[in-house]
View 1 (spheres, rainbow, N blue to C red):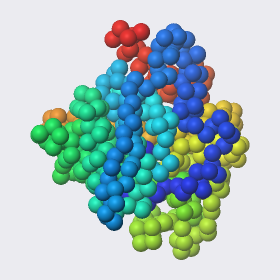
View 2 (cartoon, protein in one colour; view 1 turned 180 degrees about the horizontal axis):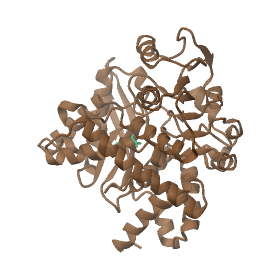
View 3 (cartoon, rainbow, N blue to C red; view 1 turned 120 degrees about the vertical axis):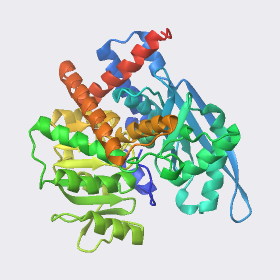
Length: 436
Ligand code: GLU
């Protein structure tokens, strides 16, 4: 998820270091393991379980793009429609050099359970393009974005599949994509993409929606755990759109002291707390949070193990694994990234009494406001930001309660509780439609 502003979230060496035990290296293996556990608890019949283990459709595309130096470069990408039993597929498009079809499958599965946890009338999908946006000009990025839509456009549509931003894709990229799709259709169809800039039918409040939804969950979790967060320490891994907004809102709405933040180049630490405006300005000016005056350097790995009340993983998948879960000191882990914790780590954290707010819930503010954007596009009438925030808060609180209550009812950890709610609702829809 972690929508990009300007910088990369994690370098390749970071990824190689973080990948845990061999079975934890493939996110789709993790996603299926999580589903299998939930299916056993729910006693899903074998056909329903098997259908939920597979994407319903996927498209692999190859795109020639004219580069600024006159050469044509060939790019590869995917769009996975995991399950649309509850409504059109919904989910972002990632631009990342290490993208794989299995990562996109896992992310599409997580979108399916996520929209169901939030009780949105949507299914789940995800797109990915293998590219390094940092080495591309704006023009190259625009041509690649348009080429991707020309290839996957036939799969998209208001009632079929509605993409959005994700890792290293921006509102500007969504604007190019909505424009290309509109030309293919012969009329403006901006609603087919969410996370658009405001003048093209974007929603107020979409920019910080993922972080705001996560902060709302942390507040609810602290209430359940009987923790007073004001003045307590927090750390954030990842400083793209989501991580940076989380820094601002953790201070503003929870009164927390954010003592550590990191990006692809490394992290910074100051036990007195880091000022959001100053760190953002430093990142804007230098391209990274590293080297921020008055803070000491900390690695991405060490940042996860800082002595804090709340840890926000807001970068890539599989960073909390069987290898480091014992060392996490946070009382609450709020997953703003998709899939940052592997199943091995889930069991360890649960055993140690860490309150984990799973991605399916914690980062669902983004897709929830994307859904509000779809509704407003259909209406042709736009809400004030305060109205969007009020509706988001209501949705987040209801979903949080539902997940916590379900986890307690089944005596399972919160991720399994979220799966039971989400996958359970998808299974119910498939039954009603007569698929199983
Ligand atoms: N990319 C975000 C996510 O992973 C948002 C998806 C959307 O808005 O459709 O949840």
